[in-house]
Image 1 (cartoon, rainbow, N blue to C red):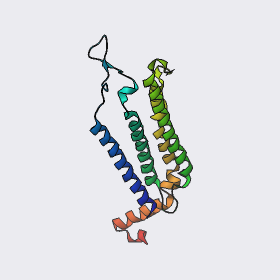
Image 2 (tube, helix red, strand yellow):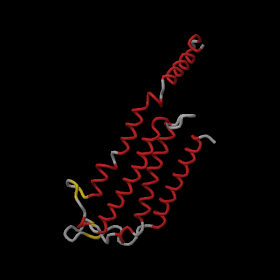
Image 3 (cartoon, rainbow, N blue to C red):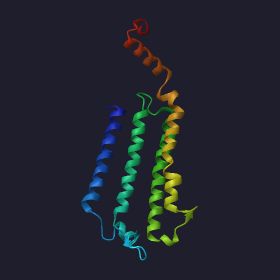
Length: 183
């Protein structure tokens, strides 16, 4: 079985695991207090509720779903840039550092959110945002751009080489009927 086949199988397993997690959320339904409590001054506004009891075990499954989403993203990237016989080539080390770092930042975000839910009054603020929001905005969301930078950095050296370009030009010439170019 080729590496591409194994990566495709991994993507399928990740999808099935994600569907299982989503199904567990749907089948279990929202726990008591999940919608929060009515705000004391504004009756159309709902606020926090009972802290961790509000999430009722869904926090761990939420972390698992996010971790699966990151794994799916990374496996899709690896499948897209994998070259037979070369693997991920010069991208390999940076790819693994990015992927492991992305998972660690996701875990840090979830731990920060858990602390926030347990004790919102003790949450540190970064600028004008509470810690979990700041982590999401300033660290977690920009991380996929690093994958894009990696892809762009190595595109001409590894993803689409001069040899690939020449092969494509020959195929186009043959498709147009230029037999001399195909020889």
